[in-house]
Image 1 (cartoon, helix red, strand yellow):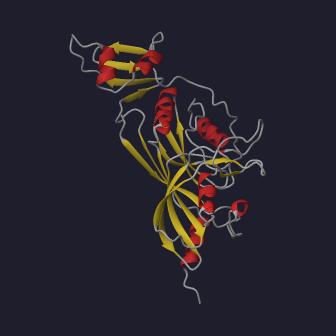
Image 2 (tube, helix red, strand yellow):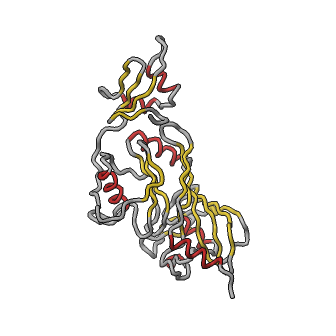
Image 3 (cartoon, one colour):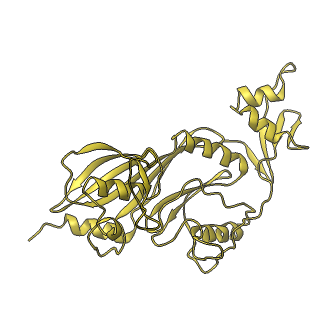
Length: 296
């Protein structure tokens, strides 16, 4: 038994304390918070059953992963999982999805292998992305119902993503907001820049620690533009340590010093808050230890 009911194969079993004059549809709408369009999507033959005092919703039909399982990749580090959601800790150097048809080595391929190994016939549905060299939590929906609700939460900016970054120098302000539109860099394919004609992009930051010539900053994204943190921090004169394409100095990490530290969202079915914390990767922790060491 789980907090949202009991999973029985493709079905979710729920207690339905319906009085004789209460309709099932009104109970789903008013008591469980279903939206009318969600009921329409469930209104297919045999997708909703009422048996005595129990309601059965066919929320977990078997699906094809659509990604080839990549058994040679490390098993993903699972930070949170239930029947509706999966959150895994993405390592550095691994894209969330293949960069081109037939490419291997993506997190999607690793998650497909995890689903297959654990006997889950689930499609790969990532709700957000991280740059290939950024570490941290990535949220997946495990059925179409969860995907619809989590996509709505993303559009409403209700999925909160917190990052930790090591930047060059020490910002004058301990806390602030960078509100600067981001567009494509016409001179460098695949990169972005602050542009008056770009899309709205908002990043909130707070300085957590300062060192001799660097700072540890916590960031919260209000929007999710490509390379948003990297572009915004370079724009204010404090590029990420190791982020050479955006002006950062080379570093032992050999990548940008950016880690997705926390992910917060409402559970797609229970609507209860879920907060997931991703531990530092070893190389990020080593960088902080080195910076905190007193200079001789």
